[in-house]
Structures are given as structure tokens and as C-alpha cells.
Length: 200
Image (cartoon, rainbow, N blue to C red; front, side, top):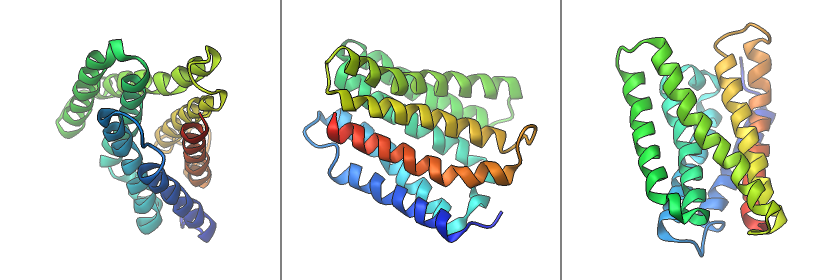
């Protein structure tokens, strides 16, 4: 599927917002939180640029699964480090071990069920944290209400993961239709993240 000019504009906007978040949007935090968020949004920026330059064909590369795992793991680690101090070490170990497990199962000859299970666990836990933690923090007034937008971004990120999975199995919808919505989802997700961190 050929990428349209509008798709490239949307991806450029995603990249610019991710770059803004790295440079401006994560100051006044602990060094570990800043590092985690910088990695997450840095990979998001890189992903948007790769799509912008190489087009949708880059999604067929197996390394996309590994790269896409870095984003939720990094952002969720930043959230845990910033708001749930008691679980910092535990979650950091989970993030490192989970990421290494994804790399190993994707780079070696392993059963498909094992690869899928590891990926589901890592993405599932990190995704639930990004989705629910900001919303709970907003509800219980530990942050400003607008911080819930980060949770909305987390939900959309999960939807993007499903879209990328379904793009390989065209049971319900064509690959072209799926990829047509991907640049929009990437931009809206990034807008939610940036707005949530800025206003919350």
C-alpha cells in the first residue's frame, strides 16, 4: 500500500510532538523517570520517522515487534517510578527481563505459542499500567484531572498493537484498511500523551 501525502503529514506531526515531549515535556522529574520517558518517546519518534521515510513496508520487518515493545515498557516504567515508589525496583526488573525475553523469543527458533505468550504478558502488563494508572491518579486527585489523557493514549496504544497484529492476519479487515488508520492513531495517541503530561 502506497503512503499518501496526508499519511506522511500525520506521521511528521507525530514525530514533532514526540520530539517536543522529549525536549520540553518531561522536565522537573527524577533522572530515572526522565530516562524512561525519553527512551519511550524517542522510539516513538524513530518509529514515526521510519514510517515517514520507508513507508508501510517497514511494518513487515520482524524487528518492529521488538521496537514496539520498548515504547509501552519505557513509558510504564516512568509512570511507576514517578507515582508508585514502592514498586520501582520490582517493575524495573520486570521491564528488563520482559524486554530480553521478547528479544530472545523473536531472535531464536522458539515455539509460536511461547513467542505470543511472552509478548502478550509484556504488552498486557505495561499497557494496563499506562491505561489505568493515570486514570486512577486523576480520580483520586493525586494528579490534575487532565492527566487521565495519558491513560487514553495508553488505550489507543493498545489498539495500535492490535492493528499491527491484525495486519498479518486479514480475517476481518484488509491490511490496506488497517494501515490507513495507523497514522491517525499514532498522531492522536501522541497528542493524548503530550497533553496529559503537559496539563496533568
